[in-house]
Amino acid sequence: MHRQDNPPQGAPYSPAHIRATWGGTGSVEDASRAFGFSRAKGYDLVRRGEFPCRVLRIGRSTRVVTASLLRVLDSGEPEYSKPAT
Image (cartoon, rainbow, N blue to C red; front, side, top):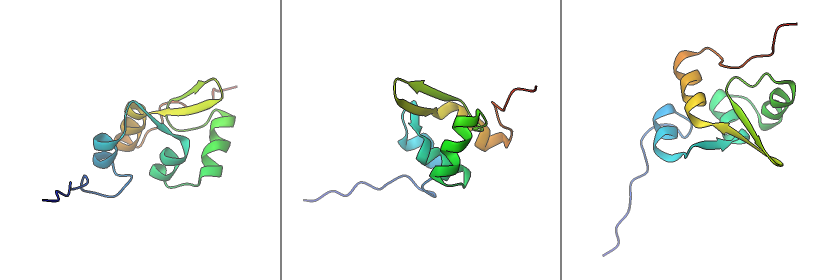
């Protein structure tokens, strides 16, 4: 008998779906989509230090911290912004 697993409910980038399917980090592309902007815009914000949540650079890879992303989505307040000059 074939068993079909049901995917988590909600939009693909909703906090509930992210909690159910992401690990400790996610891609900049997926996090950008969760915020509603493009991949290019996401990487531009990372380069400028203005991505709305915590970003880790591991070697050549850039990852977004899932817990930080969820806090920002829930509160609407960025955790990391460009330092004041």
